[in-house]
Amino acid sequence: MQIQFNYQHVSGSTELENFTKEKLQVIADRYSWVTSADVFYRVENTESKESGMIAEIRLSAPGPRLFAEESQSNFNDAVSKVVNQLKTQCEKRKSELIDHA
Image (tube, rainbow, N blue to C red):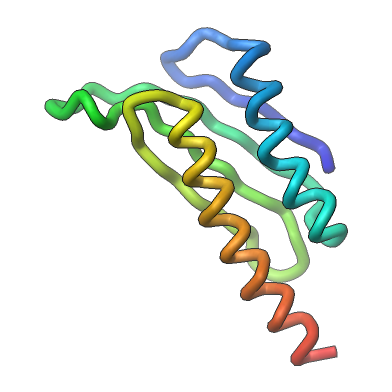
């Protein structure tokens, strides 16, 4: 799976990219039909200290693209939650692909 990283109001981080690649590898290994991922990191000013670091991931797969977004106090937590959301979406998509096959 190809992964494209995009940063908005955040400086790039090899450590963060490696963490995200490791998390996405689970999806790549389990769902061979997922071909690429676009990962976006951005910071928003919020009143809460428990949010503001936003991770968004868009997966290219058969049918409409899969997308998830999460705002947490740090990017690692946000990425972990987004990947969990995407796993759920991939499972649903997989069952739809099997039903229509």
